[in-house]
Amino acid sequence: MFDNLTDRLQGVLQKVKGEDKLTAESVDASLAEVRKALIEADVSLKVVKLFLNRVRKAAVGERIVKGVTPSQKFIQIVNDELVQLLGGHSEPLDLTAQPSVIMLLGLQGAGKTTTAAKLALKLKKEGKKTLLAALDLQRPSAIEQLSILAEQIEVEIVKDETNKDVLDVAAKAWMKAQDENYDVVIFDTAGRLQIDNELMAELLLLDRKYQPKEKLLVLDSLIGQEAVNVAEAFNTQIGITGSILTKMDGDARGGAALSLVESTGTKVKFLGLGEKIEPLEDFDPERIASRVLGFGDVIALVKKAEDAFDKEETAALEKKLQRGELTFESFLQMQRMMSKLGSLSQIFNLMGLNNALQLNKEQREQLFEEGQQKLKLYEYAIQSMTKLERKDPDLINQNRIRRISKGSGLKEKQVDHLIKEFGQMRGVVKMMGSFGGGKQVGSSPNPQDLAMMMKKSNKMQKKEKKKGGGPFGGGAFLKF
Image 1 (cartoon, rainbow, N blue to C red):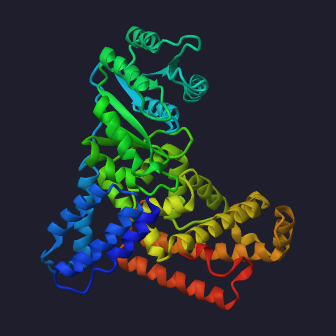
Image 2 (cartoon, rainbow, N blue to C red):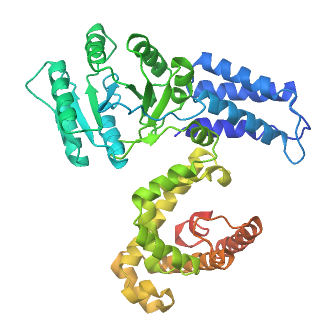
Image 3 (cartoon, rainbow, N blue to C red):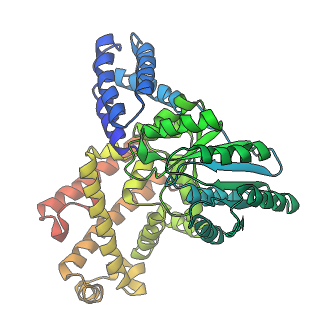
């Protein structure tokens, strides 16, 4: 999400330094680069101009307080204005009516039907009794698709494959919602390849009859500036209350998210990531601004972890790591848990650590791909170990390496290298345990602890490089 824009903005922000105040010249030079980055991200030209004017007005002549560098102050100003551009604050759904109607609008291909299921799952997890209404009677597969998704997330659906009267199907859904005390009914309406009178007439009839408090426009984030044009058209004719951006985990340039609020005067409510049916992600301007500037979104990572991890399993693993213990068994357990959060790249991005690597996007992707491959090799090797070997890595000698090699399909040299590398990781975990002093896993050690850990890790890597780097291309695990 926002990878290209984040890389460009990080490059710009690194250039503002060495002055006791932000001069007009230094600010203008930086803003020229910011302008290029935003235009490349497909942000609306009108919004780009407005944003730059606000940043310049706030930055020029701003004095730098003691202990704060010009770059830090400039980042703060850019961040604050970016938050305002994204809406200033999040806005929850209006679900005060009983039942509350949420009408999803959008063009065909934006991911509206999938989004309906994701929204239903989110509301279900929040304790709302939710009903889906299949009102897309134009696309032949839409009803079947929504039915499959509704069954998958265990949410009730109202549908009628033989009925072509949208108002009639909507009435059945509304009556069921009232009779069975549903909190929310979601109307999955028909989309078109382009905005037309027939589409708008259908939506206006539904709007007039049910007066939904929420009319959410589903937009494909990949279409860039065109998303603004679509949003403005729907807002003019129907009056949207907010929008949902889909496919935000793809190669989206981010322009739609940065342009919508200013262009329509309505909030972005949610983000949809991928085709997998998981709850929509809340759109929080402060957290999104942090992502855009490359500072991560730890809250999103924590929420994903809460959904993905078993609490008892996590607590048991946490105690082991607090004691500085790392076995092949706990490593495999940890690896499988982390895989539920996404790829290494996604995890590092949410933690705001990508910039710490000081690599460009292509180099990071290559590094993370090598890391993913390395994790697979570890899994192959560990699965070929006995239970005792998994619990006590010190048992593994050359004879056991030979047996593990045959069982895993790896060369003896590869297994030997993995085990030596694992020994280095155990050393780091022991250091973390001794520094932690009973802290919870995930709490931050102090800077002195981190510095010492990094120095020891670097020494490990230098020793490894002198030995030739092993059969995997050199360096310690992931070379972080």
